[in-house]
Image (cartoon, rainbow, N blue to C red):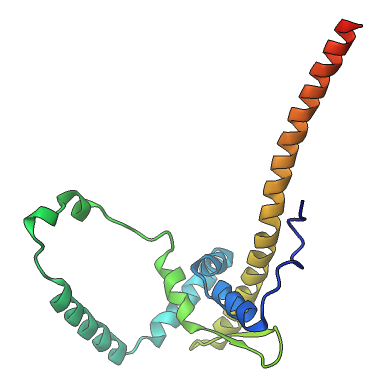
Length: 181
């Protein structure tokens, strides 16, 4: 058997390791942890800072992209493949709009010749930038620990159930032995 917490057997190249860690830091689940850690006041300041970053040019680019997308995706499908129940189904994201928006300011850069990454956050408000960089680092650390301890916890639950089953079998065998004697 292998120790579920021991990661020495899994050797990754530095490049693979760093790209994996960067992907974890930039993931929506880590962003959700960051949002959950923010107070209502901090969320309001972050939202204001994110709104301030949107310019008139960004709004025009969005409108232009939407118009182009509508031109190419607004085609009628054949009646045989049309599914009216699928059109009625609304699919929403598990992540809030703030969680999806706040990743835009995140910048994660690997340090040369090391397994360390630098986390920074770009914002119009320098206090928000510092807060978000620190919160992303904290959420990443928590996610890394959770990825290590969750499999160990699941193994513990399995071993506990096996132990309970074996104890029951031992008690039954001892009862049979006592009855035989």
